[in-house]
Image (cartoon, rainbow, N blue to C red):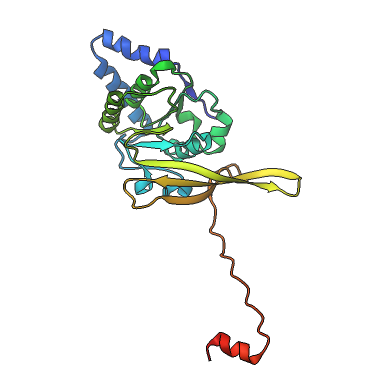
Amino acid sequence: MGAIVQLTAQRSVQDVQEADSERDPAGAVATLRAQLERVQGRRMDAPVLPVLPALASLLPGGGLRPGAAYSLPRSTSVLLALLAQPSQSGSWCGVIGVPRLGAEAAEGLGVDLSHLVLIPDPGARWLAVTSTVAEVLPVVAVRPSGRAADGEIARLAARLRDRGAVLLVQGPWPQAEAVLEVGEPTWEGVGRGHGYLSGREVTITSSSRRWPRSRRTRVMLPDASGHVSAVPERMRVVEPLRRVSDDAALARAVGT
């Protein structure tokens, strides 16, 4: 199991405040960003960050667009599933305000823990912490603990576009690139009052201003192996042919 970087809100904000006292906040941020780019081995302005194949059809362009925000349900499984492929591809991911996020669950759904930064309790300044983290990490997820003013949201949106960061918000968010919702859960592995749960099947619906209508897909979250996978389309049930009792009925059926 990889190591998770865990920060406190006080520490992350204090770093920026110390840079301000030295009158070189831009230099401090640039240094951190350059270090992350060297670790990742690529620029942070990639056109689209990849996601797991089971989720690609739910996102415009088939991935997470740098500079964009996405509205998610409060399902931790959906959040971790979206972080899995970016972290595996070397992108650092930050999760803010989700104190009960478990390392075992994250790793089970495919998240690379060595590229995961957690800030479980950002306090009342969750938006400021999110903006600070977006300066240096390409993927930032947050569970808001309160309302944000329109002006603050607009400034964060500008920060995302400037840095090419992706924002995943557990809850409503204005001007979201896509809005994901989850429903219709069913469990597999349980028989008539006995058996073990082996997987959970859900429907994820995605709405986007880039599409004329919403999209839906059925996924295992997780499947029997603990991963995320698409549910194959089931064969349609065809109504059985009625028995024809005589030649006259047969003739009418075939139109002769």
